[in-house]
Amino acid sequence: MTQISRRGFLAASAAMAATLSMPGAVRAQNAPLALRAASRTLDIDGRAATVMGLLGPDGRPGLTLDPGQRFAVRLENQLDVETLIHWHGQIPPNAQDGIPHLPMPPLAPGESRGYDFAPLAGTHWMHSHIPTQELGMLAAPLIVRRAEDLAADRQEVVLFLQDFSFTSPEEVMERIVSGTAMQGMDHGGMGHGGMDHGGMAMTADLNDYDFDAYLANDRTLSDPEVVQVEPGGRILLRVINAAAATSFWIETGAVEARLVAVDGHAVQPVAGRRFGAAMAQRLDIEVDLPSGGAFPILALREGARERTGIVLASFGAVIDKIPGIAPTAAPAFDLDMAQERSLCAVEPLPERAVDRRQMVMLGGQMQPYVWTIDGKLWSEHQPVPAISGERVELTFHNMSPMGHPMHLHGHVFQVVEAAGQRFSGAVRDTVYVPPMASVTVALDAGEAARWMLHCHQMPHLASGMMTEFAVTAG
Image (cartoon, rainbow, N blue to C red; front, side):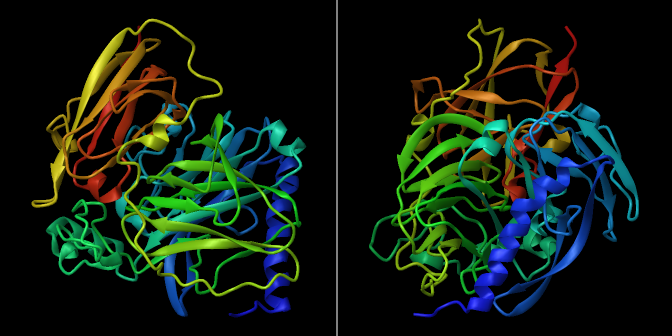
């Protein structure tokens, strides 16, 4: 058992205090907020790592906006490669959506571009839409607070999850696509097509790369972030799964919790101590702490033993060392869609007749590594059509051996059917479709434009699993 030093604790407390003071600085905004795509250096288990990042006006990752504040941002590319940033969960004008050449070109090194739109409130994030750059951690939180957030007697804590490799993103992608990444994979007691140590057959294709580290707020469990909290206080955990290719279970351990929002949209509270998030999904989890102590919040890699996380601790609490490898492997994420089917939107879409129903087939395999929508790669894709203003239902039918977190740009949708069950589910922008399963979402087609529709597992996207939701004027 180890104790964090008082100096280390105070440093962590100061960092949290600075984070919490950020909205005050933002409130006085007269000019666009400065956001920089830049390289930065992290300490990963005692080893220096140069990664990409999105740094706000205070030099730290991400942006936090006040209620009613516009998304008025000046993005500067300080990298030595071209880039462009997508505002995930937001509905900007199509020209500001952040997809290279659709319609705007990427930013050259040294170039800046302005953005200005009314943002959706909630827990969102922002990232490059170039898959190798997201693998290189070019992503950050984007928190848009509601008036009730400011009024609530609770402390907000962001938990930003990423997967990291010391190998270059380009080489990681090459290993995955070529199939060499799968050779010898046996983390968590399971390999591809193998058995776990308990003798139970595991699905072969939960994970297709073993990363060197899994990060929570840029750190591993060898040196986790310690957030100072009040004994008996209420915490709002804003969990963002920004990993390129990893789903996580969030565990609150000894503390009972409530899931109160997904992808920035409120749901009827669901009590529990373990909640899952596929790539690009977000969870808002309320936690009522008991009296003083240290309370780890852990993120478990699905189907494996690796884990990461942060520690909520009252002043003076003893903080035990937490191994980065759990004793047993975490289960697969939501194969039966029990979590998704338990969610009910606080503000569902208005009832109306469906104007258009469309099946979207998800296909592909590990060998050769090819992933498709409606049997086609992005290079030969056929757009999914809609007319602006139509109520559309899209049914994602996954005939492949891997799950796919499907993200639609420029819209939010409501999950209305899963596992053959019709229900008034969560409002989201990213829905997880397990292997050999179907999920139906409803939405109202928005701005007449080309909007990306794709799997948010980056190697799948890079291998062709993207199409467009082509909205035309009525």
